Image 1: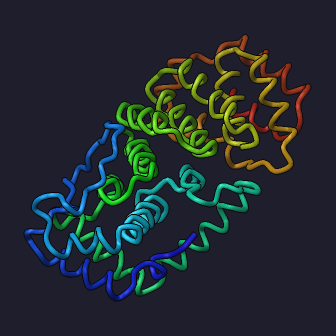
Image 2 (image 1 turned 60 degrees about the horizontal axis):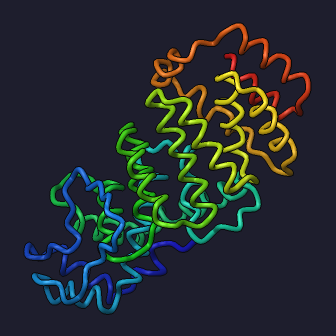
Amino acid sequence: MNDYTTFFNPELESILQEIARDPKAKLLKVPSSGQLICATHDSRVSIAAPGLTSAEVELLEVHREELGELLRQGCLTELYAGPDAETRLHRSVDANRRLEIRDEASWLAETEQILKRCIADDKSQVAVDVLSRCVRNEARAVTVAQLATAMTMATSSDQPYIYMAIDALESHRYSDARKLYANALSRGLSTLLESYCYEGLAVANWELGRPSEALDSIQMAVKVAGNRPMPLVNSIIIAARLGRFRMAENACKALDGLECTDGSARNFIPSRAGDREEVLAKIPLTSEVKHGVAILSETVGEMSKEVLSAVVK
């Protein structure tokens, strides 16, 4: 992963500063609410598009790739370091080019260190400020959705659509998140990003009181990337809560068979504070579920036992 300073060279800074000052520059402007882009076609802006300023034409013609990377880093920073960020949920979601994940815990630690360096760097702060002034229409802080929407104008990458979905999930706009994850999944992602999207879709379905659909989604996340611990954890929890103990048992075996597991992941779905209680109340914790969990806990490894304990709390 690179930081802002790699891409924010003096020439690019000068162009973005000019765009930020020019009231006629509209290329990167996005409404404060962001845009929920549901089209699957390429939305990149051509250098021949009408109404572009000379600085905007130069930006697209010479620095399109660097611009896309700056916007991606902006999304990354807002998701991970923003004041309202639930970083435990999202730090493994980006993935980007780091698809050779040894285990998620070590990758998260490395990501955190890189972000700390980025945030502490003065040049990075200048880049964030200039980019934000190009994207936002008002004085309010730029949002992930705005940066991601602007990113679709610069690049054909699928990542902006994933960032939009994550932002919707983070903002508790679960219906929007479902649509955006479905849009991202329709675009033909890498195996690991596809797994992350199904995982996010499972959370959205769970929050919307669609437990069966949440189970289907998390099973797809496991199917496409079965070596990731978090989908297995979530599969155990949802399946057990729904009384699908054979499915839960299979997930327990797979989880216990992994060399590296992230124990903190066990709270991903079942106990995210008070805002999840209403959804959980729609799935009564029956005596049958308690009994089934107790029996299953006797036959699984320590990690799976810990996960199963969350089901009946």
